[in-house]
Length: 187
Image 1: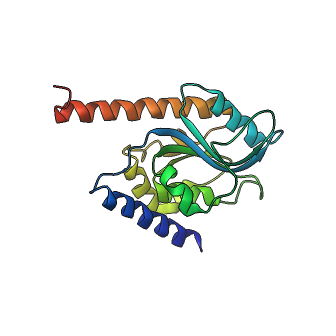
Image 2: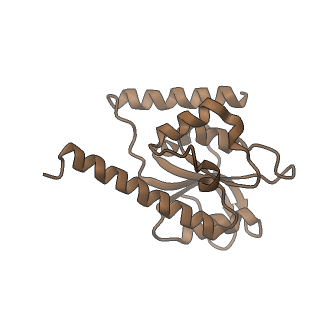
């Protein structure tokens, strides 16, 4: 399946979930999600372990993680259809770009876009080439990133990733609180 078809399929699966929930999108209550495999000693491992060890971040890991006690919440390999419900409840992920001197766009980036998950970018992924789908992905997560997207989601080290996740989580929490107050639910 090519990447654009994959995004469309993920979007369709998301719409099915919303439809089953009578038009209500899933609650994005997972701050950070990662799916894949990583071994200790890999630079990706340093990012993921640092995020996982940050108690203020509600993170969820799917896949195979090898090294010094790092385990996944869902261990093993799963088809995308099985992990989509978790992605639809997640706010952010991280995309690494290692295999061709930072010019390859990882599949995870497209999967994030399709699921409405904000991707943190490590490497030279160029989000400006995604056009309307990127704009739609930004709208789905409820935050305007048009003017600051490149700076907001690009990270250069594990601490920047943690700081960005915490800032975004706080921003999402403030937006939810404002919605509740505007709806009068707090009265």
